[in-house]
Image 1 (cartoon, one colour):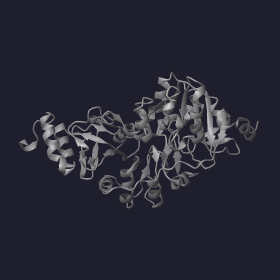
Image 2 (cartoon, rainbow, N blue to C red; image 1 turned 180 degrees about the vertical axis):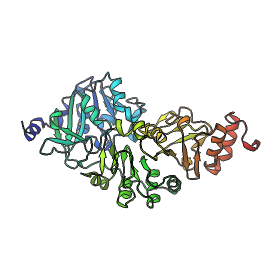
Image 3 (tube, rainbow, N blue to C red; image 1 turned 90 degrees about the vertical axis):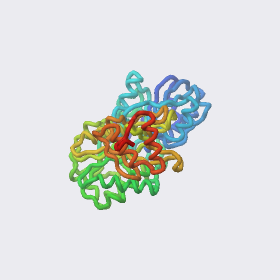
Image 4 (cartoon, rainbow, N blue to C red; image 1 turned 90 degrees about the horizontal axis):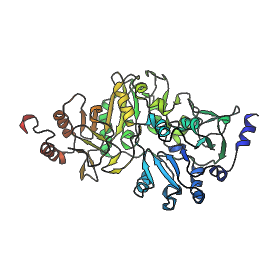
Length: 440
């Protein structure tokens, strides 16, 4: 059967597709901008015939009844490995729980917990080419692994998706069913950096030399770095997430990927999340390659890059150097994602550096983010023994190889001036550092 006829044979409606899902099954969903909005919007309409469906999800961008509606209790339970705003609300209702993991092992982690069984996978893809190949487009973190493992694979075809290159191709013969939904793509506009974030961006830029390979996380701080790098030369990208800022640096001639160790001449990442500018950039771009998250985020792969710089953000850091990026006390906030992967990988790299950046205060300047001890219940994202460089708007703290007393000194120096005496006093009172240099 030729590919066109095979595609037509497998084409069904969205309600028919969701009708294939049965009670007590595990459903895996593509993540972020690759999520299938038509299939996900339909799920909640089937609650009366479905019980105890486990839905494995990450960073959902849309608002869906099967997640948000309290009446879904008992019908769908959400297992999420990176929370968004809606997930934090649902978590408190007991209908959702976080899966601790590292991104490069995310799919295998879940498959292990589910006895190597994901019953159904819903994802997105471009329309097929004349040979029957589809592109998984904007996401390759876990999607291809789940396609290979799932008993039933249903892809939502969207002609608005860019055709991306690398390991993204899947043949129509590998898919059980397709549905069509040519919906606008989910977009994440860059946030304008605050004054503090711009100061942090300036300090981080000082640590990035010509020829470095970068991993940039998400948010205002990574966005703030871009303007400070416009005079750098021959930067490369090896990242989990492609962002709009990378497009700006590429168009300015700053990113050339010429001095990369791996995939020389190409930007490499696992998924893209940004605006239409980014999606147009990655479309059929021979200089951009998508690889599975198990590859891009393997610390030992990352570590093969020369002068690899990992830049991630945090919520809180204590004077020992423990980093919390995923919870506010007991309240789970986001997830580990690829932070520990890329941080460790950068430190395995020759002349590499793992940078953790954070604003010095939170809650409108009323709370210090650098503290004597992490808040009760805080989840440790990067252990103290892995910490390298911490940056706030007040400077840079190089912690690698320092004892706890010297770490505390370095971190207090880059904390907000309003809190420095308090941090020092509490650090001594708790006995973490009984006495600072000079007997203070």
